[in-house]
Amino acid sequence: MNARTARALQCSSLLLAVGLAATACGSSGASGSAAQDEPEFTGRGPITYVAGKDSTGVTKKIIDRWNTNHPKEKVTFIQLPTDPDTQRQQMIQNAQTKSDAYTVLSLDVVWTSEFAAHRWIDRLPADEFPLGKMVKPIVETGKYRGGQYAIPASSDGGMLYYRTDLLKKAGIAQPPTTWAQMKKDCAKVKKLPGAKGMSCYAGQFHKYEGLTVNFAEAVHSAGGEILDAHGKPHVDTSKARKGLDFLAASVKDKTIPKEATTYQEEDARRAFQKGELIFARNWPYMYSLVEKSKSETSGKFAVAPLPGLNATGTSSLGGHDLALSSFAKNKATAIDFMKFYTSEANARLALKDGSLAPPYAKLYDDKALVKKYPYLPTLKRSILHAQPRPRVVQYGDATAAIQREAYAAMTGNKSSKQALRDLQKSLRDAVAQ
Image (cartoon, rainbow, N blue to C red):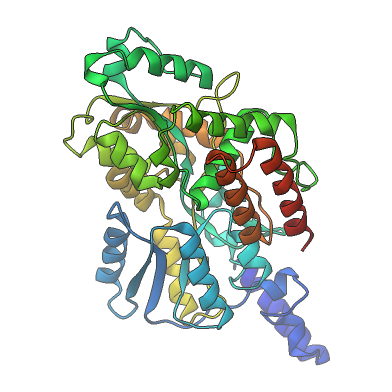
């Protein structure tokens, strides 16, 4: 008997003995207690899985496997746009109308608090998932006020992709660990005949969630923070300014090409793959795509930890967790599908076919896997030392403010100092709500 069943039996006994109101053991009360937040998962039949565009093909393979073995409980894949902000907004709109069109949601790891606080997703039976085998920081992303509201499907850590062939030709033995070192390396590489017309570095700098990620990495890599230990905004500081200064100054001196202020993940991937960049910041999914591309970059690149101000930098913690819409039907099927999707076997498939970061700890130390996927040790380090983006209930307001001010500084419309001063005020308002 699991903990959820035991609680249900205890609750039923109380109701029969003393005639307590049914709401005492209900599944949708407002107090936030464990019994009220954790509903009974009943109903079997077709469900939907809602996520961003499947650029790796992994999601379709996993769903096809499920559907083959569960013909009466088929999963329909609803693909949302690539842009995370649009994904989040469409999921929120579905929840606000209490529609049952969405069943299992693929959430960015920083959305859990917002979705749980608004009761858009159900508290899950944590003891029915192998969370103890997963990397702890990844498991924590699915928690809200002591409850597990989302289960890790994949993690993510930012890495520095670099051209091994060009660095070697320029006499550079190791990838850079600092921003200054990276700029010096670029200057050397650009003197090579084969590097004519190349740009130095790009990440994700369009005004969308990727900019929040890259801004957070710059601030943390300079020793700053966005929220302090008490959850209060703390960006109007000299350390945070050094981080934003790196981004803004790099656009100004063309270390970051101007067109990179329009880049999302795939734009940066394509630019690196086509030989337009010496260095690029991206997630692990890019590795397999570039390697399989048969482009001039295939077989001529590697990854390293992100550089920072004075030493190795800090990644933002990324990834996707699976959550269950509070308004869905056939929740018993949904829970079983979530167990299937987040299994170790499917984590291996996602690693193999999409170079997606697995949530299972042992896969990073598997010698056979490391030999086949040499980026795993770097990725593990990135994830274990990563810092989360602001985990606040009003995340939409917080990320919009970060994007607005960081973009203003990078495009020269504000100084870093003024942008951070304005951001401090906006974050204070968002956190206070």
